[in-house]
Image 1 (tube, helix red, strand yellow):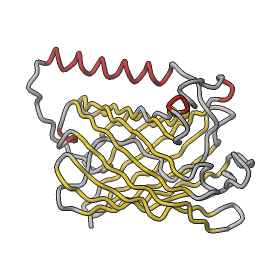
Image 2 (spheres, helix red, strand yellow):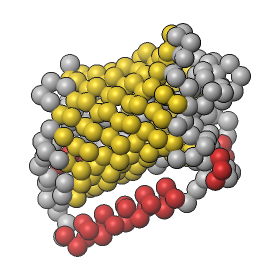
Image 3 (tube, one colour):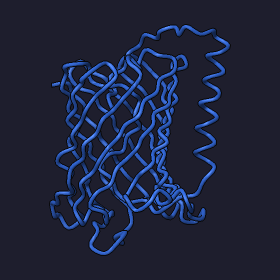
Image 4 (spheres, helix red, strand yellow):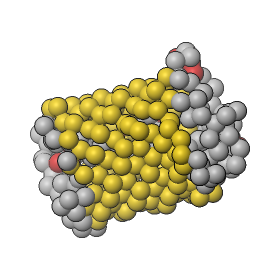
Amino acid sequence: MRALPEMGRNVLSVSGENRMRTILRLSGLAVTLSLGCASAVWAQTDEIQVYDAQIAAPGVFNLTWHNNFISSGSQTPSYPGAIVPDKSLNGVTEWAYGFAPWFEGGLYFPLYSITRGNSVLYNGFKLRTLFVSPDAANRDVFYGVNLEFSFNTAHWNERRYTSEIRPIIGTHVGRFDFIFNPIVDNSYDGVSNFEFVPDTRVAMRVSDTYKLAIEEYDDFGRISHFLPASKQSHQLFSVVDIHTHGLDIEAGLGAGLTSASDHRVIKLILMKDL
């Protein structure tokens, strides 16, 4: 997912009334899905980002470097042999290529962690395909879907193979962006065990260089049986996006909203066309 901002906005071939009706429906869907469930215990991740359906231009390679540091988190591994989240630095380099205006392919490699004991660990790799509405930055309403397949090491995930289905729904309203990713994670142990882990972002364009945003990351657990509220995981991030001619930067500070969440997390994402 690219975060290179485009300031222009195309006028859709629908009336203003129909466009507003679509925006309200999308907003209502986001609120319903975000508030209508309970969740599971938070675990560290290599990527903390809401996808906005922007991709590399056809024929262009892009590198995105994800890093997040859990300055105050769980001191207990989520399963025997797992990495302890507290004081861990987790990240990945994401290599992407634009195949078409609507299609981008990507490789996450290497996934890594530096533990609180200063051990450097390799966590695996991921393959992804991202299908989007072309020129999403200039559309009033945009959408897409990201599909990922992960190969995990034993200390990163109990399952050797996992995958992600990430729909993308969003709208630009003046200086504001409203984006929802109703993600479903698959551990290949039955459809009833799919996990609902949505991301939400509301951003405001301050200038051609800066955007300010609020993001929420949730893990609602298995779709067949959501956990009680006391075990929900919700994290809220304050984020700043900085766009320059050669580099894009996304930095954020996150706070856990429940006892099941890591309490404080710092994220930094660097993006550059190669």
